[in-house]
Length: 312
Image (tube, rainbow, N blue to C red):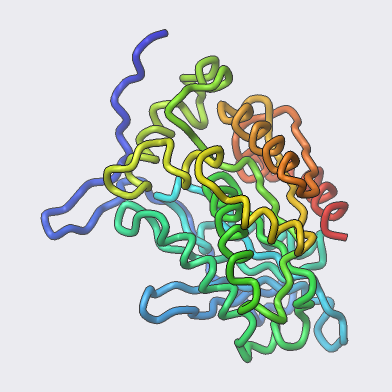
């Protein structure tokens, strides 16, 4: 096997301790007033101290009704280093998901590494859960079904949904009336010191080469941690108490992946582990690449069918 070339994350460390990202991505403004959009959106601050916010998506057709919709908390991808809830590809994905699933989507704009290494993103996810149950935001008060809440994320967002779900179970007594019914892990981003067969086979993958994964974990994990830290490798750590809480909550888990993703073996292993913990587990593994439905929106309708079946 050839030695991977040095990973260049396109992030420059500045003398004042800040970072500059060389890669720029299109963003989209929220729109809560359009007379033509089938889905309305708005940005709401969550925590002034951390400067986090959420972007809400609401299907327009429920306005003026007494309909209650499931709540889907969504965490964007980007290896914990890039993107935001305003990034166009994730805005459009959440827009279409709210429409197709008839759900309120809460896209969480969490803090990024390396400025804010893990567990900052996990803490922001829990912040948003606490915010949603106390906010007076009218879309939430009028249309959200607090008894039908799901945590979903893509790539690093899938990792975030997993860990946020575990943390939420630990503080479940403080989250009422919010009830978490499921975790949706869409191509979740995990790793480990020991390579899997799929990682070795797809070392130079076009979307997620091995050197990129390794470099991202180096910048996202706590300083000094390796890839066998529990944030990266879900097989480590003693969490039997949390799994018991998840079983008691009857929270189910959906794991989605593609056979063209270098992390497919990790995703399949995660699903097997969760099932062995006695948690209801649903899997869907198909063909394609990492983050397929985000990079190719024409593939998203198939995903939305899977999500409908899982949620409803």
